[in-house]
Amino acid sequence: MTRKAALAAVFIFASGCRNPFSPGNPSLRDLLDAAEEITIDGRRLTLETYLWRDFMPGVGSGGGPLLALVRVTAVDRLPFPSAVDADRLWIVRQDAVWEKELSETINESPHQLSKMARDGPRWGPSVYVDVIVRVVHITGKRYLLRASHQLIGAAY
Image 1 (spheres, helix red, strand yellow):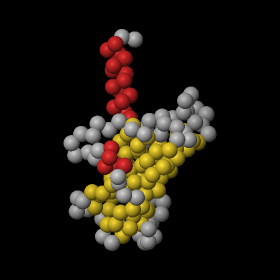
Image 2 (cartoon, rainbow, N blue to C red):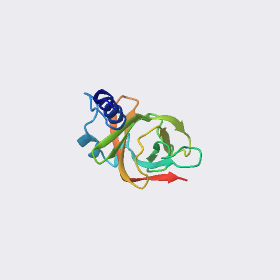
Image 3 (tube, rainbow, N blue to C red):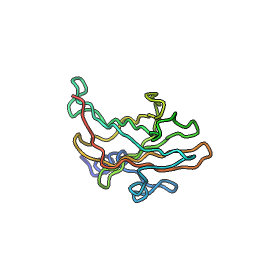
Image 4 (cartoon, one colour):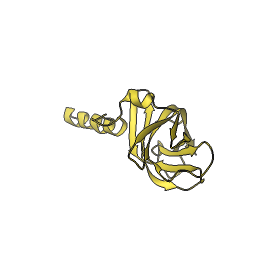
């Protein structure tokens, strides 16, 4: 492999797993300092996660990329506030960061906002990460909400 090709491969790998922390994006310290519970309009919200990689037959050797299901949960178990959404996800493993836009709202429970992020890095399974979600209020105010020490599982 030529030096240019090797550098290109390193850049492509790094760009998929690290957040460049461009202006306006939170720093690694901001992400790791995010609260594990936030209060918006008097409602307490926490974060639950389900992280896994698919190793079922037909996926290919080495398994599929990381999938992340995140649930922003209203602690009082009342219907989730309609003025609140979640739009971005960061998963931190040591000093590597994967950033992804959240999509695919999944209506599982009336007191939770559930969303997916797909095509993540091939970390794990059986490793622990911190998961941070950006929660946004209809007024434009933004919050970072964290779930620490989350296990990446596997589907076999």
